[in-house]
Length: 277
Image (cartoon, rainbow, N blue to C red; front, side, top):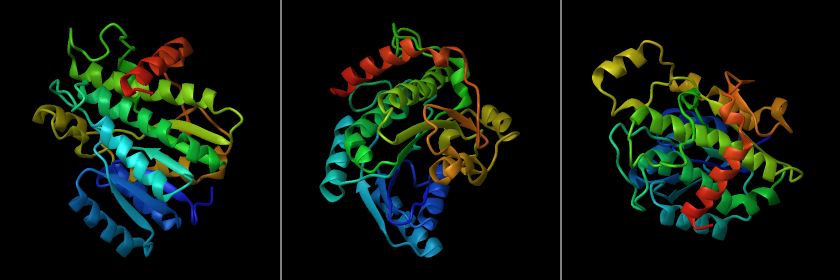
């Protein structure tokens, strides 16, 4: 996909694979719109992108992905300035090791990793459809293999487990991708998700030292981790492919549970309720 002059949104662009992805998309000549929580960090990133790529078409807009109202404000601000969106990369993610809640009172892993991209994508969907052929990319994880959707206790209020909470949020990314792909049939918009690898980023900052050392043995660089996101954003090879899960720039298998469209349908309705859609 030729991105020259196209509009692209990338969440979580101030560090890690999001930053590498933003630099790559800027080099392709896209007009970047970056939702950022910390505007100071955003300005530093903007300066770096301009310096590294020569691309000055970068807009920073405030957005806290742990707040549904903030996401709505971002979407409103974006749509007031742009009438199209060619590429949306839902890259931002976190892994809370202690149970905490967003400003909306929702368990944080579920709120930021799933509800945030669900709401943002749906609010911007008309602009994306208007721009077809357009692409949506969701950063998921192989961690989905360690979870099943627990609709009876989706926020871990009764029983909390950090790994299961994170894994469930990444499974939700896959369900969202597959359900959305079904909804977008015939629109010219594709949506795919990916496993970036175990990447050396701030995702693991809150892990105990022992866990960080163990993960560190097989971590890859953010540059390596961003390769599949960039591939899905730019490659003509994936034109027309939708609802798929990618790993190392190739389609990969998920668990059988992640293929359960009935669960995907339920999650879609549950998510709509959470987001007031």
